[in-house]
Image 1: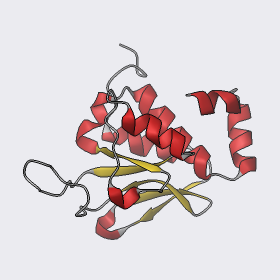
Image 2: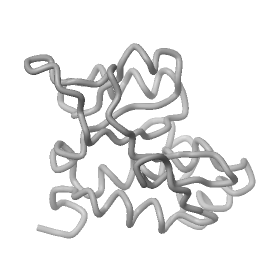
Image 3: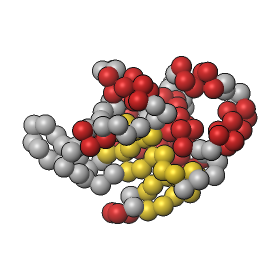
Length: 147
């Protein structure tokens, strides 16, 4: 098993987000990290909220991670694909983001998680920073929108 194919871990979210250029970390309520590029959040760890809860017990999820996405189409592709652990709630209707419980991050490979984090960064970075990153990583914009 390669590093990219192994199951993702919560530590990978932090490592990948911090490895993106021009990233700063702010601390939200509850000392939750908020990863930003150009003062715009792209990944953050959310406090328990009434809209994200276990349907059986009604207990609030304590481990929700929010990832920005480029568009509503990208969001729907992730949350409607039953093979992914991503979800949304009515609170996020119209918001360009998807949710993932930290307890389910291992359902993704590290490579899949890296793509989600990188896409989140690209959706919030300035056009110049995004183009530079894509050029340095030999990724065309067409590939990121197909993927």
